[in-house]
Amino acid sequence: MSEEKVDILTMLRDHPFMRDLPEKYLQQIAEFSSLVRFKSGQKVFEEGEVHMKFYLIVYGLVALYSEVPSKGELRFETVRGGEVLGWSSLVRPFTKTASAKVIEPTLAIAIDSNKLLEMMDKDRELGYSIISRLIQIVSGRLKAVRFQLLDIYASLKRGKSESG
Image 1 (cartoon, rainbow, N blue to C red):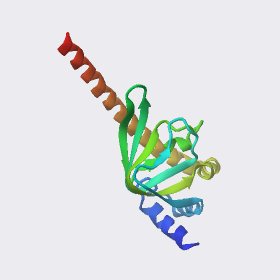
Image 2 (cartoon, rainbow, N blue to C red; image 1 turned 45 degrees about the vertical axis):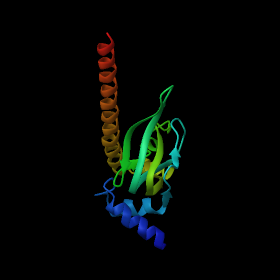
Image 3 (cartoon, rainbow, N blue to C red; image 1 turned 90 degrees about the horizontal axis):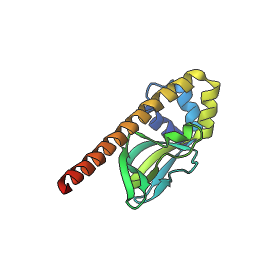
Image 4 (cartoon, rainbow, N blue to C red; image 1 turned 135 degrees about the vertical axis):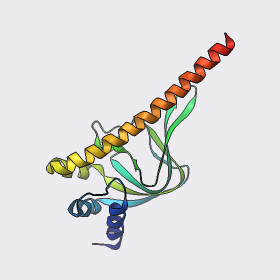
């Protein structure tokens, strides 16, 4: 195993998303993963694109946002070290549900989604474990968007009552 793969394996063991996965899975995942560094301002992916990488953030900050017509970018969440980015790479039809832009220099483990999906198909125990973890992430992101929508609705309502 190369030095980079050993580093990736160590980081996989330490990352909260992978915590408690059996060592045999971590070793296999390390084989089709790589370390990537993103610079501030760099776009990782765009909403609507098919992007077959799943990222475990080691450190840094990445903004998740959607483009709102006539309003520009609406940032709804910030992903940081210990969190994941690109969960939709593991869910058909694999299109990104938001755009991602780096806020500060970020180190991530990039996992080949196709190969992880193959592993999950072959080993249902692993598949169940990964999907269970993804559901928690998706649930958290839905809550974040819901709270933002409630804030927007409340500010619109206040604006109408002040003018009316």
